Length: 334
Image 1 (cartoon, rainbow, N blue to C red):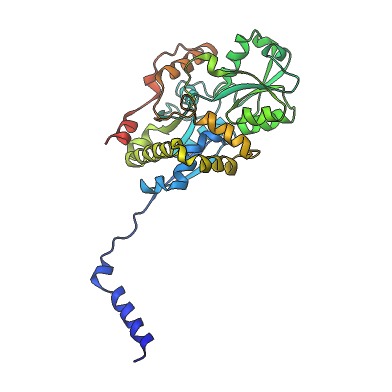
Image 2: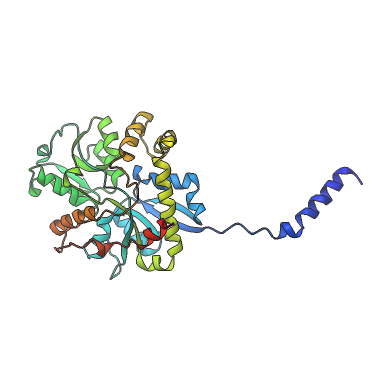
């Protein structure tokens, strides 16, 4: 018998051996559809996808980008998405019946991890130098009664411009507002890092930031209570992978790769701007929440703004009503 036939029979015999037959099948990954606004605040997800952290926790995560908060919320209730990364004000708005989109009665949204402090700045066109210059001008927001519109309204009022002296229009998420501001379709808007950096590079002006409001809870992880109760392992795995992504991002040895992720995922991002964005998003203080924990003081600021601007008007004071940190605690338990 020729040597190649012997080799073939030997390979077949080994493939049918008890040891080969006993090898376990690869673990099936649970698919998760996650929705978020497009931007640098998604770095932990991009990192977890790149490094295989989701797969290590039994998940296959698809990140989808939403044009506005209404589409994000309705997608959660329609079952199109299982999880969202969005402003906690959206959770409060819909749980309190103050959201713009039509959703089922008794919505069950809650926040399960903290993402950032909003990373918010008011940005005006080339001729707008101060908040006072906004009198008589048009400002854009994602949605009129939820999202981060209340932050912009409060910052404008604190800058000495009355609500009656400006006009607010809907323009969708940060990316779209940034594009429309560049196109001079309105005079100012609220942008999130790194888009205020990109805007300033193109001759626009940063007028003020939301840091003047004190602690503020911006992005959070959002889920429905019913889904979470039936998919605890998946939610805990997502939090673990997200936190692993954060740890990898904050490892300074990975800086060049992180900057490359920003360039690859954000239009108009350049190597120089990626360095500046990294310094803000991954600063030792501020930026992305390093521990992914919810900020109760920051949530109280969100509730104060909604108590002031939300309709129908309600006095909201209890952060615990809108969060469930039990999944976070399980994810980080040793």
